[in-house]
Length: 253
Image (tube, rainbow, N blue to C red; front, side, top):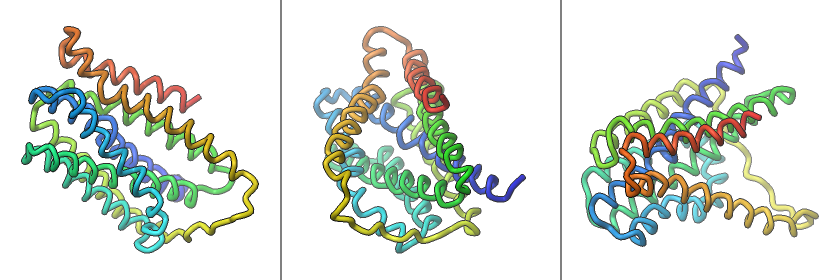
């Protein structure tokens, strides 16, 4: 097999494993844990939103981080931050601390997301790039589909579900250590004040925000809603898996 495709397979694997945890598992797991503690829907929504607030606030600085530390160390930092956040949920109950922990997970998420996208583009050849990116996006959808299976197996308020998520994230980080031969420090994008597409950017941002709002809301609250309607926890979690499978199929097409 082509060495380049072996590297791409490793990048896709670490990205998919991280996706299982950072989006497919943690968001509904945190939501269910807080609901089981008796927190109201507003509190649950605020804490769940912390990771995406982190994405919005920190995304501007990620290219500089990748350029300074490289992709391997950035991927390791992503895994470390995510594991810290996950294990923190097994220790603390203070709502402000929980918000901060989910914020940390969000930073880990955006670092991994941008790093893996950059890795895919830089590793694939010009002819392979479209197929490589399409496969990457498909596997990210599969991560959302696979994540709720952890909840179905361990329950929404079981501390072991958090430990399993931490182990998956650890394995994802270890895979990045095998990618040192394709490590790089991507250049920081240069600003172009004469870009003719500048007026389209707000529309694209709004579209991305609207889509992200709907997707994140579904991931965060679908399981809890189903449980409240009388579904067993395993069945409720599998509803979210079906949601993820739909996204996977669309990405594949």
